[in-house]
Image (tube, rainbow, N blue to C red; front, side, top):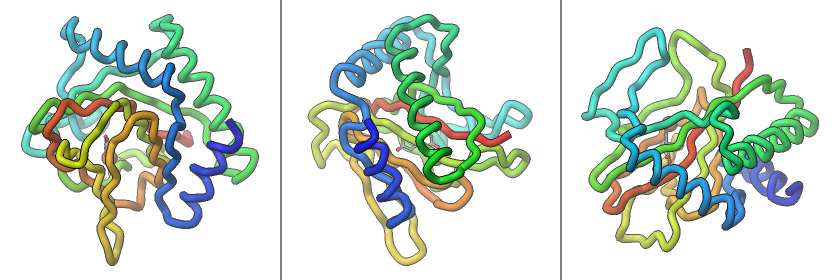
Length: 197
Ligand SMILES: O=C(O)CCC(=O)C(=O)O
Ligand SMILES: [Fe+2]
């Protein structure tokens, strides 16, 4: 995995946005996607809000995705595999870049057709614990006309990233403004944050 971890970290250092294709292998991505689809069918996914627990706001004009938090307590082997991967990524990141990450949180995310998330930054005004944002996409055969790009607003340009299967994107939560453009197909991912408490 070190090679893929380095791809993500090096591109982050060079471009402020780390991108690694196949960060999730095909099998893990497929099983996590199956989990997500079952959670949706069982009506366990909830409309996402903005803000944290203390101050949560649901506004479908800002974001229209649905989420479900991953948890080792769910006792799901694929979720646990995912957490093992994140544990090794975090220890690699901490030892190679002295980032001091002490925790993380991740949720499954579903953007149904027509959904989006308007321009925002990921760190909350009342809580600075989120250090790095990390997204992993679960969409096989994503086509350009499917839309749903992650659009990063750099100072001088826009960067559009298509949500293709297995790809991971990594950036600093306090810095980069970004949005999810309207998706024309169901768009699935795992979204999370590396935290320092
Ligand atoms: O799914 C993405 O590409 C980005 C999601 C996002 O910005 C967020 O959930 O804060
Ligand atoms: Fe975000």
